[in-house]
Image 1 (cartoon, rainbow, N blue to C red):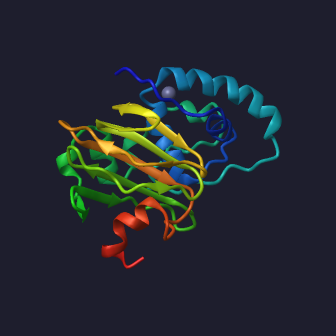
Image 2: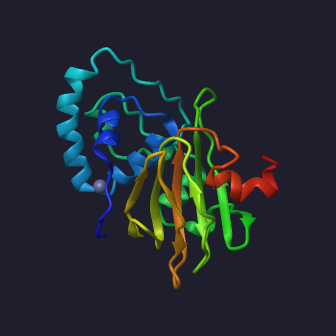
Image 3: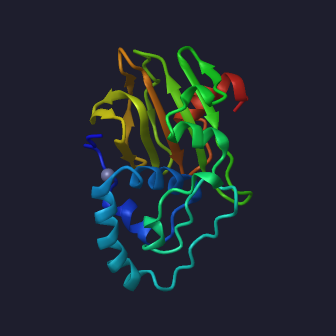
Length: 210
Ligand SMILES: [Zn+2]
């Protein structure tokens, strides 16, 4: 796997501090599991973070949450514990995409929302786009992380293939298009609930009544 798009420093920093919302942490840890470079970077940040974030209490992660508990910089390097994941996420991370109970969200777009702990904020879901599907242009409410699990997509920032992560802040607008041959399957998280103007809201509005 050749990975060309990585996590931002600020994301690695909050990861090292154990201060990431659960939904984002799920995507971060999934990228770390396949990316030696970001694991290496995380180690550096963990050393800095130890000094800076001593006072911060990491968010507790309940059993069944789709996340490796990131209780410290070192713990964040643990392997993904697939046994504690929802079945759909486990299936997707293992490449068994047909085992995900996809729900149709629009023409050429399917999704599967993943459960978070009761008190967790944010949104975590699997997304699947048919070959050549163009998503609506959208901005982001808060941080949005997208990890490509299969196929590819392209936007103004380049082409994102398997293992690549898009680490987008809230001032970014883009209009991704799924690979013409393979389509694209992603794990996507945002640290806010979908807003009316957000990507998910637009995609899912007709179904979810948002
Ligand atoms: Zn990386």
